Length: 252
Image (cartoon, rainbow, N blue to C red):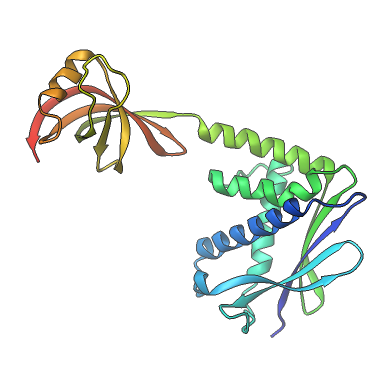
């Protein structure tokens, strides 16, 4: 079986800042790890990593292999690097407006792709290319210039902004209990509560009106409350509870 080699090449007019190059490599490795997990191949994602096996002269050219845990075993016959670069190309093509199929990415993944593109985005005389070859035959290629890298990064930034917008949903008759309570019914700060079927961690809490807060303060820590709550989330994680109504009290 022939082995796959993943090549990153940066052509440049001006020197590339070391942090841009290193962060691009780290982000590439992080996305590769995510790719292994998503593909659910018969490979332990904790035992396979990307390793630089060669640096060539001229432009910055790094040849990379997917190797086993102790860098001694080449992973053959899985097209793992080909699949990873295909996915990366689809993401870049989407943010360049070349394809319509939107990839499902979280904020961390979006930030990784920004970093991957940064060497090309940082200087107008720079281009960035990735390719995978197997047995000396190139199977897939992605090349992006300075203008394209900046355009893709701008659209990625927009997508990150959309994910950070709060999402609201009202949950009815859920069990809520206090984690921290400020002994002031008029206070809008200092209160935190837990709703375990939403998030086991304490979340900042406010109340619809003073009467609800007053009822909570009668016994904030020895009982739980069945409530309606407006859940405000960022990137699908609860960041604020607004208690709207109390139905009942339950002993803890």
